[in-house]
Length: 190
Image (cartoon, rainbow, N blue to C red):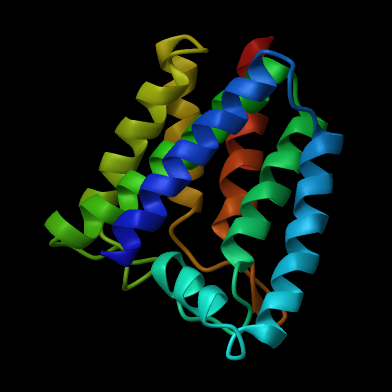
């Protein structure tokens, strides 16, 4: 149930950020500010988590068990901020919709209906990736023509499958997906 709450929150938050970027109400500077605020906030919460019942219950309701609570939210905002910094409003908004819908639906669909694992990552399902491509492409096609929207979603969701590492640290897919999608949408903008 926690994963469903997380992914619904991912879709809702991503849709709000994408709309704000598309309509010029949110920019990269604002998103970087939120990222740094959340990083500091979760750093403090990490130390105080066991002392304060409210924070423990709140984080346990939404967050996966990790060494650093809130890491996925921080990476989400950093990924959105980088995308907003590098690409046009239209490209960034569509790329964030691909992240929000594609990543969420691929995970939920793959867990519920997935039968075949991908050869790039044993925990990810082919059916989930296909569902993520369809959901991300459909969401992005609200802003971009269908062909580039679905192609960008397909490339981004396929690159989301393997665990990409720098040294021993895995790069969060909230950084990879919107930047890759934004790059291909930018390419098709010409």
